[in-house]
Length: 256
Image (tube, rainbow, N blue to C red; front, side, top):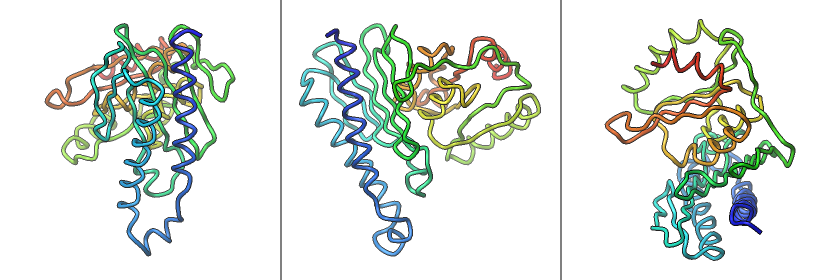
């Protein structure tokens, strides 16, 4: 078995385990009556990362880690895992569908494998570099070509009010140019929707590597063009754009 196939199998197994952990939750009403929804979501974010990190290191003790909740470890093997234990935490917080577990692994050449699992929609996207992309084990391709005025586009917005004001100004100019906009609440799943054709494009400014690492590879393997602009907002965040090549060019022109 080649390394990429081994890593993909590990990531898929762990994502499913984390999904089972996270699906086991009380109703929002029960949480409102008890310790609070926010406390519960924070606790489960940490529990999910603990499970993911533990399983990765059990299988691959010399690999590196980059995680949203701080599970960082330098690689001794040349492989680094990039994990988001719950992407779309606010969706999870409010018991809305679309939150996911995102697990990627990269080497010196970039993304090697990616798995994004959305338990609430029973959707598991996966890819390995050069091996195509899959949704629930069926091959997927992005929509191409798509004209800008027929494009269904996903996006996300910053929680910081001042940054959101800038995004709102751009959206006022962007919305008349496209078919419609969707804001689904989880960057990784939204990019995967581009990969499987449920969205024509996705862009967002203010994301981190763990938000797009797995999904970006999946979209690219599904034929999308994925570009990352680094260093926005004082060098701390990134801008991601994923779309079929023709639509990507049109949206990139507007973004610039």
